Image 1 (cartoon, rainbow, N blue to C red):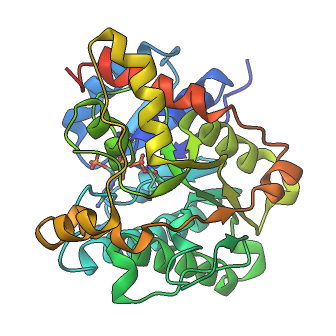
Image 2: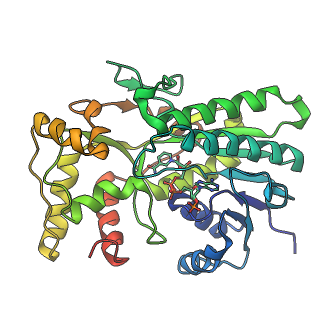
Image 3: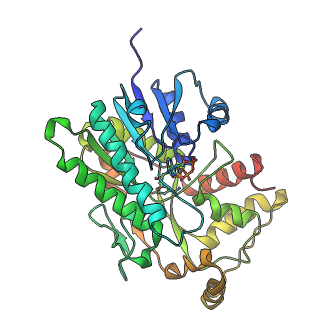
Length: 341
Ligand code: NDP
């Protein structure tokens, strides 16, 4: 029997990575996931085993902040999905807490990929590397880059700086030595969880269902289903013409109050009523004075950004499912896994 094609997935404990790993195993690839804490391996394997056959899954220890482990992790891999990057619920005071692991980690992974002769690296960037820091602009394509400054916050800085560093690194390698690079720029990712330790991006749905917010700020989110993000990673890995391109991966925009109304309609009768009223902007601004998490959304009040997904639809033949089903699936998963009691 022919050996399976080996793919490395960085940050195998993460919300998106678990879906990418499931999709890869389903498609018959062998997966080597990196973990910075090997003690979590058995729990992660058990969570994945509820989704798919995990006999071709292995783990290697590697931290974005250190060189150790990356050569072992990427040895004999044809492809690398570089998904790992810190995404905390609260922004750190020191931007370097995110920028250094995001940028230096990406460079470590790319350098190890070049040494291992990897054919292609797919890197998970974000729309945070595209649409932040542009006052008054509301439509974005892959040609746009976030403008790095204190105001856009540590996370958007980290994603922008890391993605730019990745492209520069690949451009600087001698032609024959460089792995191909494809970058995905997902919007806000929601959808079912494979492991209860979900991502910061599930906090909006979780907080609404747990009634931890008094109402809905007049903001909205460009959203995409995590299962569609996983499909996009596999298409980015295997589509020949994708090499050297970045792709926005986003389904569409939803107002927070519309998300709340759908959750209330679906889960209210099951004992999870959701607050749907819109809060005036001045209330949100006052709360923001005391709560840094709320402070982060103040610049987004009343704004709507459009992220053009025509390139991914055309080049990668990517299609995404309707967002209402995704929102309901997120709520079901949070309740089923006991994240929302
Ligand atoms: P998670 O927080 O679930 O996953 C982040 C992963 O990065 C975890 O596996 C984490 O490991 C790992 N990680 C963080 N710091 C380090 C480090 N120093 N060394 C090694 N691994 C590290 O987030 P998501 O799954 O949502 O995000 C995955 C990727 O997708 C990130 O690059 C994120 O920026 C990007 N993205 C996410 C979006 C979203 O809405 N969720 C939107 C757009 C892009 P550990 O478990 O050990 O902490």
